[in-house]
Picture 1 (cartoon, rainbow, N blue to C red):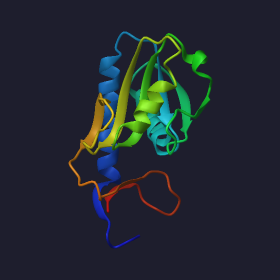
Picture 2 (picture 1 turned 180 degrees about the horizontal axis):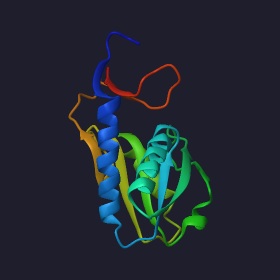
Picture 3 (picture 1 turned 90 degrees about the vertical axis):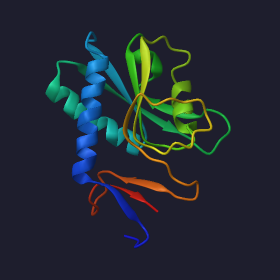
Picture 4 (picture 1 turned 45 degrees about the vertical axis):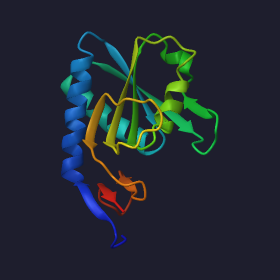
Length: 169
């Protein structure tokens, strides 16, 4: 690991944030029988899987996983999903990503569901850097922090040989 990285959240703190966000999701969906966790591949999806585990422990909600693979370096929406968006129509969608920087990734994530009816869409991010250039709001946030544009936030989840952590470099 590079010496220039500063540990912002350790494994235990990440788990505490995920637990709290799971309870917030549950409170926001008390009258629902099913929700869809739509994770942006790959760290957003890993975060969604952890949220699912906790939601299944603390509630009777049926939790459906939805994977979104985006081409983030394009100027138009190019996404591959599993399953197809039509398979989750008329459900509550929880869009999950690891870090919110400009908001482009979440905006593209919303785009996946634009032509599919749904009950509501909520957003979850582990870290919100407060540099939005897209009009995207976060509903559930683990940590909100102000950074300078040159800094980078790196989320490590389920990487072989590395302990979970959120780093600033």
